Length: 444
Image (tube, rainbow, N blue to C red; front, top):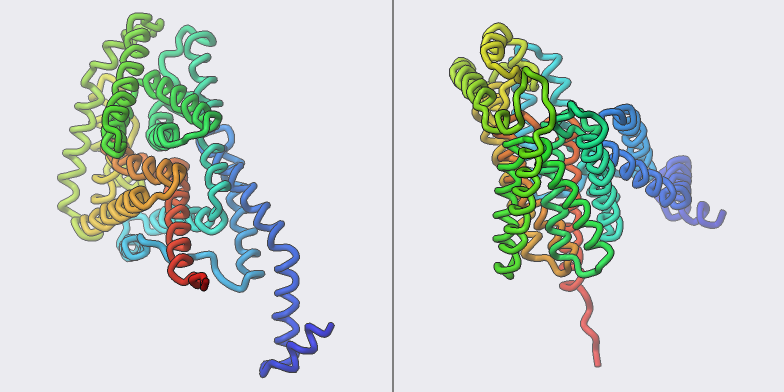
């Protein structure tokens, strides 16, 4: 009671306003810690469920609950959850440009909805950045995400060899081998990086096990684009490692591991239907590549009809506008491929114009530059492991996106969560540096 009386007496605001502010302050001090624990718990569940197609209801309903609780947290704290980040300018420029193209889109309502999904991904990025500032929580979130590999990876490998004699590729509860390869291209480099820089035995064994299972699944997914992206990431990781001999040994081991598994599977020759032929024939076939080149040529021709504002933001816009022409290309391929441009960067240039593509590349470059800066400033093994993995996965994922438009849906959410963890590490470094500067020197 004395707290309220003194606050009213010393304030120039009205008594009712002061009572309201102080009541909210007391409520926030009592409930905020528990609310933050609930939010972090939801993020753990949400991040773990991202790869699994059968847990889509968790992702959708969990997101609604998560954002509602974050809104309540903002009300109790009296501030929004946005913080200053190094990529603020390129991110704002890209979002603003996409918003500018919406009125000129072929399907404005659809493009507006796709912009909303991108803002959803950014909101999750800021949630992780705000509520996972502690190193132990960042580590636990990464372990939860990597643990998903143990589940869908083990299931997929067992399913491939025992559950169905006609199973030719691992999709491992994810919804398709292409989606699986995209998830693994994001998670494997972080696992390898943490395995290399971690000094404690138990975490290193965990990271190593998840990485090994992930690499096995990547090979059995038969995604040539995924394997190419993984090869690029392995080379970048070896470059980041100061002890180049150890780094090259790890890269060589990975290459031999992948080659041995691939050789075993090719010689094993999983029974196939008459339509699809042997595994080796499919791995060396050029039908998908030829169909992609034809679609890219079509998209390049259409690009110059809308070079500035594009035809409208969203993955499906290309299919809806040029359906007859793309169907003709797809039907000419012996192996029918999915609809779309099959290239994230061509798709963005076509849908939001060449300026939109430039702004997106600027955003990716800013993320990668921040990750490398965080890596070289890392003061401990966890900081180096996380930032090194994220610095590598950005260009690796870009390579994967050259052959399919994968920067969408839950894959994009996983990308932003991993980037947020890296940026949270960077925020911790900045705070520690500021504390060291402003710390009062001891007087003898």
